[in-house]
Amino acid sequence: MDNATLAKLELTSDAFRDGAAIPAQFTCDGANRSPALSWGKAPPRTKSFALVVDDPDAPNGTFRHWGMFDTPAGTRSIAAGQQVGSQAVNDMEKSGYFGPCPPPGHGPHHYHFKLFALDVDRLNLSDPKIVDVETEARKHAIGQAELIGTYERSR
Image (cartoon, rainbow, N blue to C red):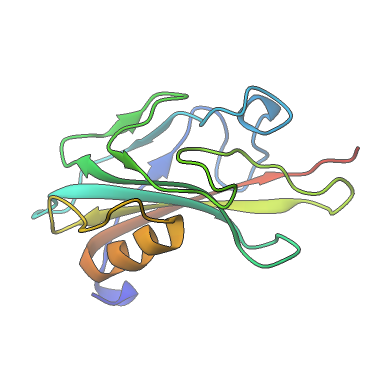
């Protein structure tokens, strides 16, 4: 589906509001654990969810921080530090979440948390990178939400 026909979902976090700063505890300067996330009712025919987090402000191009997929359709929230479903390999070459960690003095970076409601139970992926998860999720997306947080390191 193209973006114009995707159902709109709402993605929120108890840790930060859309467009606001991500608390340090969810970054490389803190505990480096994922923030709690929640979303409302899924579109009809939703069979699973996928989530990707990236930083398009990274100096060498988009840096991908987290990819989660094959998350059950009944899921409506993820607790802080929780991983639900399968985890993709981030751009640090590790599976799971890697929090915001922009270069010191580089200014504020924007972290895009993108949730996809999918019309399949599972994405046909084996040890994928986050870019692979997003590419496949877009092919099966019937709904989408986005939450953007910022983070800046001065030192």
